[in-house]
Length: 82
Ligand SMILES: [Zn+2]
Image 1 (cartoon, rainbow, N blue to C red):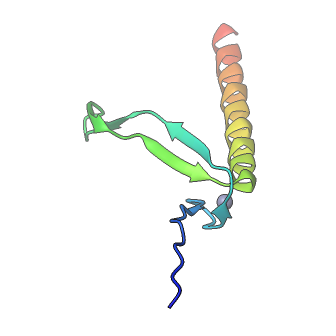
Image 2: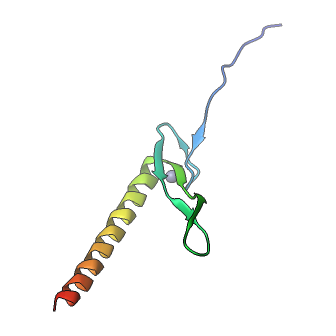
Image 3: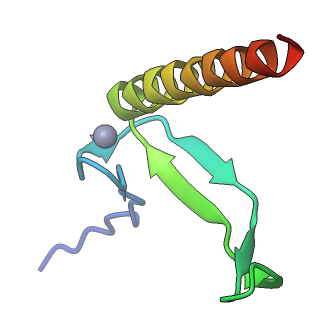
């Protein structure tokens, strides 16, 4: 009888698309969880392990939304000055 030892393997999958990843991109959004009065009541952080395709897609959405918010703020601020 021959025996063979097969080393353990760590397989990490993307939290969004569930693909097996060779390289992990961690996204961490640190924030407080808020109670019904809007007061901090705990850790509301989000941590995701993402594949390359998903981190690119998520980055694009974050940049696009941030620019939208900046644009809305500029319009609001311009309205206050008039
Ligand atoms: Zn993915």
